[in-house]
Length: 62
Image 1 (cartoon, rainbow, N blue to C red):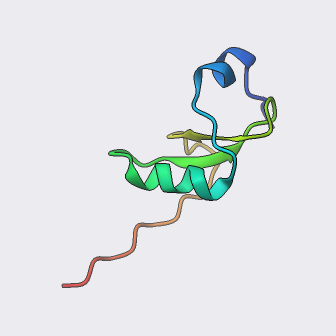
Image 2: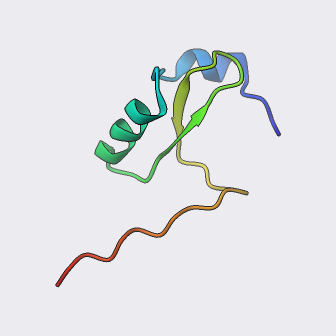
């Protein structure tokens, strides 16, 4: 597992819980997912999906 670089961690918004980060991700105009930072212990958002299982969006009702 790669660690988050300190410079990257310092530049990103921090969320105290995964739930708070998920709410912010759902409001974004792009697909984001929360992750726990190994530097600060809080949650950040990322758009990266390499090596991650990304759930499919739910089909909208017609």
